[in-house]
Length: 82
Image (cartoon, rainbow, N blue to C red; front, side):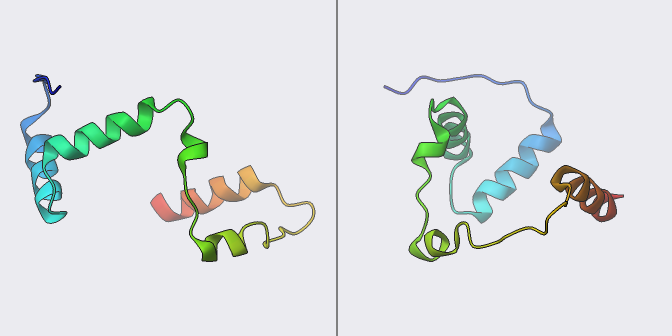
């Protein structure tokens, strides 16, 4: 059963979201509903299905010993966005 929901969102954000939805060939309602389903799913990790190619590649990358992943990630994101 569908129920109507009223949200208060900035007008500019609504316009951008409608353009995004239109560009994807979907309704804004559909996008919001699917987002809410995704974030409220109890076991998100189990529901992700990997394609056969991704499944084959999973676990094949070995990071160099002694690398600080969080430090590297922070550095790369800083370079990208600042």
